[in-house]
Image 1 (cartoon, one colour):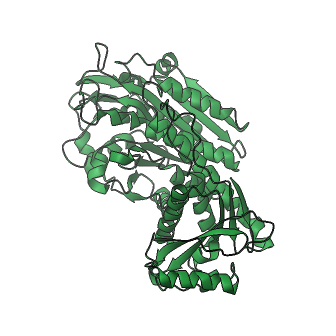
Image 2: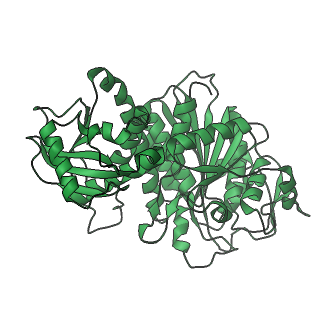
Image 3: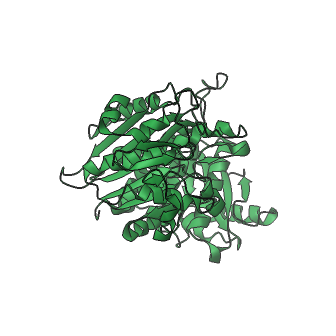
Length: 499
């Protein structure tokens, strides 16, 4: 997609569709910078003759000629001006993207001034528009024979109006940030949407290796089961005992700063299919357990975005990948295994497997002497009870890190919400036969799962993101969301200098 930041539509520009934002007061004053008075009057007359009210997401198409460079004008409702904020702006941009796909718009003149309306910070706005526009072409086609060779809808060119020459140079970097985040989200979506007979632990390792070929600052190391065994990762290995697929520990390093700068480490749960093991799940909806590797997908997507941005920071992504299957060699409920940290775990439920792969990975990453660690996992159904599909849960042993993540959530609108990690919950994991049980009792499942992980993170600043409610959509819109790639990339963008 070509893009440009210009003051107004000039004779040099190709003919295209002009997009304007209109509030419920139906004022067209914000359009004066982009249109001449006679053209603006035509829009005003069209509004007055139509049922268009300017409600959020409402559309009005105007086909009357508005000059030699506008073949169609489309008005997008922004709602009540006094209530307009970042959230409403994103909803309006989503409506704009939907209209683009519906009408197959290729060349677009976007009136930035009318959408931001002096209430929205322009750098933030351009980054978010870019995320949405550059992600508009994602369609899962990998296993669709009939549509595989069809071209996805793409925008050819977009002109952002209301920018002078000085501002246009500065603003381009925010568009490129959005493009990198969109590419990371699409990468994570595609990995999540792939079926488990394709997206295996080995496939994740290959994807990481392929990513390293795109940027010389990236390097990848894949540990085999034999190597993990020698390191004492018995807990991680126990999850894949019942599968023919070999488990993998994948490390992706991005070295964008000095070697002595402590890295930020992201750790992703990569269960490429989760039957529950011997504690087998009910069959209803089990196909969605291919999404149990979305934590790993978000790590790869984020590393993709960071490498594209070429940031001056050090970031490491670690993926604990396995397939959880029942068989004669599978781990049994009641088995006791020794973790890399030498703590023993009584596995009361083999369907609580995410924490088992993560605990060894969280011990492993201490060798990198991290500044901060964030693990990302589709860990508990309980987080859906608490937060639904709107927000991911965050639990942490570092209040400052939590605040940074919450701030990145606010900026990215990739929502998270803090749950308590109090000492009172730890006793829920007591075991008569090991140092710790892998599940708690009936209540507070998201919290007790984080309590389990906290036993392996005492040496560094750590936060846990439970994305079981936000990693994919259900029903007719079934598909991976790519969350929380945007949150994690914003976290690096906002804090790289201070971390």
